[in-house]
Image (cartoon, rainbow, N blue to C red; front, side, top):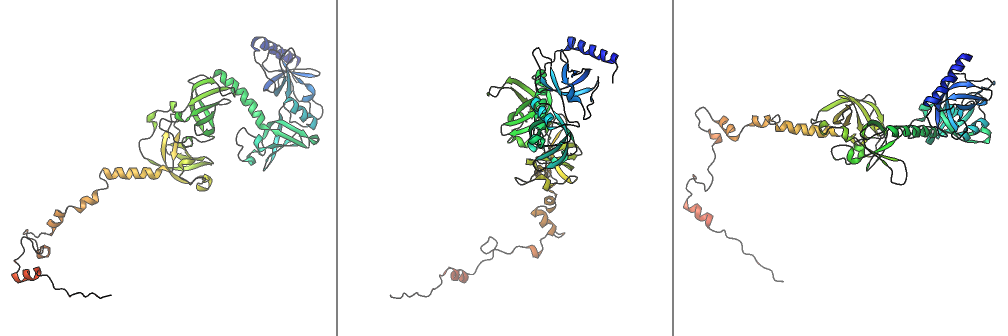
Length: 434
């Protein structure tokens, strides 16, 4: 426990911070972090960066033996229950310690207070979570904002959740981690929009792909890269350029209010603005790499020129094939470089290896490397010259026989000419009467 002098110093510091810097605005349901500055008989005072301290009910911070679990100077993760007006900001501590019962969880549901739990089991429909001794369930659709992937990987992890339902006296508790992540994402998005400007260069994650463009999450703010802004060359399908879950570098082109009726802000992005047109490789060099990771939308390959991604469309597999069945991690594979961006990131292709070999063979033939066999054969005159003896006369074996009727042919006897010119007699044909 802190001494009275420590308490007085912290309390005075919080008051000064509130007078000088307390401009932070909180919203109901917002998750914040604060420092305990004072402990009263019924409430605990927490500095969360506002003009006045937030208050947390003391009885919500007791353990199963009735002992206070926090001290002055401790950091707490809190949820805003009430704010604004003349009333002080009401906060609720994230739950999850021992002694949590159905009534406490229902209170957390009403106030939006996050609860902490340990994931104990993965089932077909979601995850089983232990919250202070009570078994709860988090559906697979409520684990992540996007696709959750392998649920077994979450077993043993501790996360914060928002309580959706409490029924049958706590025997049926439904949680959502997604709701908490979305609230934090909206908070970060509002802060990001405040400092986002046209011309900013940022890293983002591809969230979805449409025929007309790609939607990229910038960390709370979603922007769109139109298909015409993906590359300098014509793009037949955005799937040939990026994949869902891939990290990309983009440049902000415009920030405008959304006029589609859905509200919010529309952010237009560009990828080609950060790539020089001549960045595409001019050679058909074939690289030998190693498969490092396999995903449902492509594979990652390590090459002598660096790591790169081969999207599903460039794997050369039949439509609908699973790359996990066609490739193995650690196996050797040949690829060609499709492009390299300014960050050195490679986009590779397996399908283009055969085309690169064909183009390289044709160039070798044009430059003469493939015509040595025809030069060795020589011309017809060269062959005849080889047949001539030292004297220059053709041997009898290669002298041409006279052609009948030719210019140098011997005279034909007259009887032979008359016999050849006289028409041959043919046997008379008889016709039968019907």
